[in-house]
Length: 427
Figure (cartoon, rainbow, N blue to C red):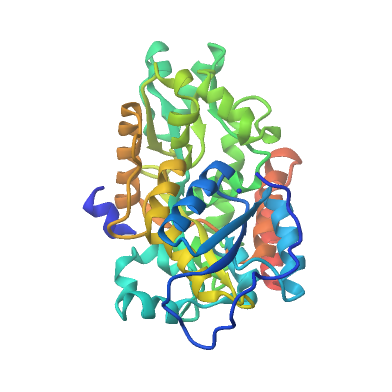
């Protein structure tokens, strides 16, 4: 892993658990080996990966047992809210940074005292600053981060471009010209899942940060306005991305998985809008893409030299339920997943970047992935604007709706900015 990168920064039906796992109540942090049952709940990772984590943890801690409930994200949220509000829920669960962490923070046990007991006063120095900060609010650490990924760049199939006599675009004008030529050849330019608001937000924020990163993050943290002229300009450039024909036909109604993912992996699109987690195509779709020269490049933005920066965040934050009766064991599972052997298991499955300074890199990654991964490392090291998860749930919803409105229902960029600011004012 590059030194610059280090410096920069399961499927089971959801059920309402009757309560946290049984065990002795803890009045102080215990560093004893974990015992008893530890209940885990999340939307991620996959069942196969979770089973590997569970077996690995219990192999190290034979007196402990890990049970897991994995479900689709929306189902997971619904079940988790019901359980936590009643004072029950799993011992360990996963949240996203930003809005989701803030939503559930009242139910989470801070882990600073646990980390100090297990790893000493200097435990924070093991983590890259950015990922750890995303797990903290008001000076308290509410969980341990797992995985780091970035978005806002373009995957590019250089083989397709070369076949059609197109150079890899560095400017918006070059990208627009390439898109026109690709359309004429029956090839989609950017495969974009505009139906997914998380995808829309990623590329809008990257575009906005390219124009004015300071104003963008001021709006995100509430100290600035979404109606700032630079953000209105970002909405205008967002609209142009679709109006100028840079995406496939019907992009506003397409889903990333699997509409646009399939377009790109099957060689029907020259570019793909998706984050670094798309490295998993080298495992899941290697037979389809093995003959292509694929790389990662900055998103060209009209009037911005060098294109858009990337935005990054941790994949998840593993947290301990404050009402768990087995908190020390629960913390040790979180620690195992964040900086123990479980981190390697997660990295091998998701191909994320590490959250710790000596964190793992994927084992067994196909050689074909090396070029793109190195390019993404460089983007993280040299072209990272900041975090990608919107802090406010209501603003996140309003922003996603506004972006969809701009590209599908004629909402003007100025009115889109006003709607998001209204949500911010009322949050």
